[in-house]
Length: 265
Image 1 (cartoon, one colour):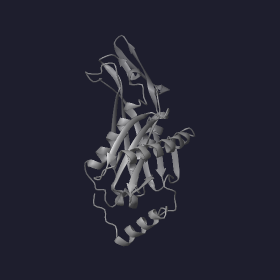
Image 2 (tube, helix red, strand yellow; image 1 turned 90 degrees about the horizontal axis):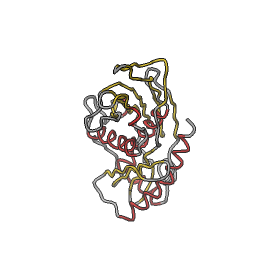
Image 3 (cartoon, one colour; image 1 turned 180 degrees about the horizontal axis):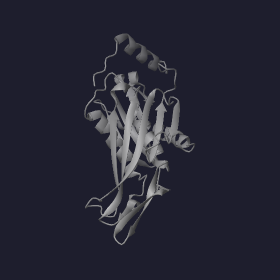
């Protein structure tokens, strides 16, 4: 992606940061308005639309009966995919997933898998033969920065509201009852909180212009008990140990607020 910003806009952002301000009047540790709508896609097994400011993500979960992997014969499967729709930004193009989309999928997948959000063992119906596969599809429909946090929040909310058909084994055959739905076996909840370094300041929930100007960023994945389950550093510039420690402390506080928002769905 190619991002262009004028020197005037750059200097304005930096001048405000030096005054302890942001271009949209937020505090350094303040998120934009967050909205969540669950059961957004009627044909999906679970879904959510999440907006952080103008950044909007639609997530759908679809369950499919499949054969488990050989190295995990008694476990279900999670597949996470991201599509950066061309309507979301001038910098997004039609075609296969680019590196940015792949990175989003991997980080969100890591936060879900390492928590773990879903008890995958309970998605196994017949060991080594049949288990549920969960497809988590994340569609970025509007982009104004901080896709990572919005995508993860959307994926978690979609999983928490997902219901799958009851599946039983009868004489070695799988019987799926589409009328009898059951919630996913949820073990934990997790979220991502991204902190960026820009002009020697640490801020959360960067807008698009702040991301363009950032030196680097760190996305922290937290479980509900406050423990860390994922970590992703982006950007070419380095962060000192002190900066990472400070960023993690900021993120852990904001994470509690994000979990309280999830509680409302």
